[in-house]
Image 1 (cartoon, rainbow, N blue to C red):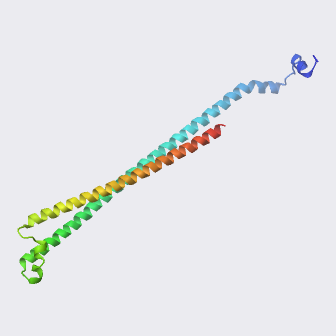
Image 2: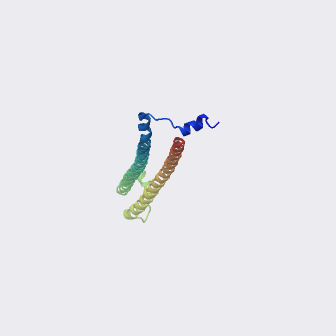
Image 3: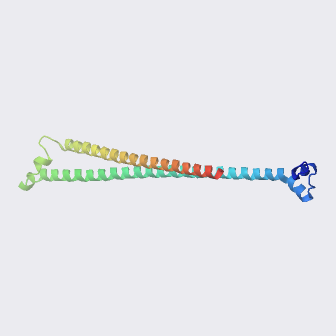
Length: 179
């Protein structure tokens, strides 16, 4: 029993070939090389993740800036269109009123009470028209801005949810890869 193969091998260790001795002595070096490769891979993965996050953040900022610019352009166009339409209406009213004042024809005189109430001057009527136009412009601008803010807020929450979902998925992939 004493001379079983395990005991014999302990008492008489086998003579290692020079190649095996070299391989055995290289084990710490190989372990160090593997550790360097692992560190490099981890650093590359971290850099790639950081670059992807930065690109996503920049893309979101660019989209928000573009949306804000579009909102500003839409608001300016709406203001210009409303102002032009109001100016056209004021010009038509003034022309009709002046025509009614200058011509006493029976057909035009019927328009006079509706367009030109008695006791009102042209300045008073134009002030009322300007106030109405300003109120309409303010209401339209506020409605457009509120609609765009709601849209941007909805898009931002959707994109943040997508980002969190992608982060969760990448986290799962990382944990699966680590196994």
